[in-house]
Length: 191
Image (tube, rainbow, N blue to C red):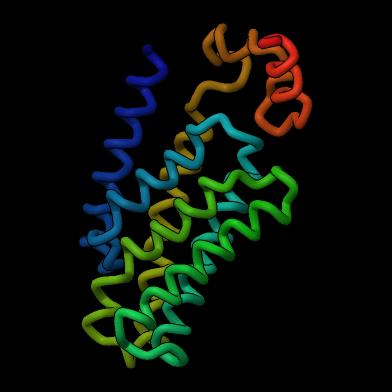
């Protein structure tokens, strides 16, 4: 409980400092400070695969969403159909990245990266679609900078596997989500 409060307090102070320093240094991070810091913290907090693989998944989804915006601006029509194709393409590629990694990259991280980019950039994109080449790098770097703050701070402060609750540690290895025999074992027990 103390570690949770510590992580929360440090993250709150860090996000506040990001906003204050951004204004002072004219970095223009204010609009994505909460989104970025919180998303970075989530990637660091969720104990699913290694931190590196969670980060790779997040960056893959983020990059795919960015490419999606470039395609929306240059290839697909500015219509409901064009937006639908882009969404399907980005999410499908997020699934493909996770599947191609054979379970090393968690699917949720690719989705989170894509959603973070969309949350940080959709409004700006819709307001000035032809300017995607000049506005998207600003949105992307702002989001990545603030997400890095959340990820690094929480990675340093969050509980390690040894600190995980006992119920998490005591789960038998054969029931790990990627073990194809787990379902077979459960079916045998039900007979």
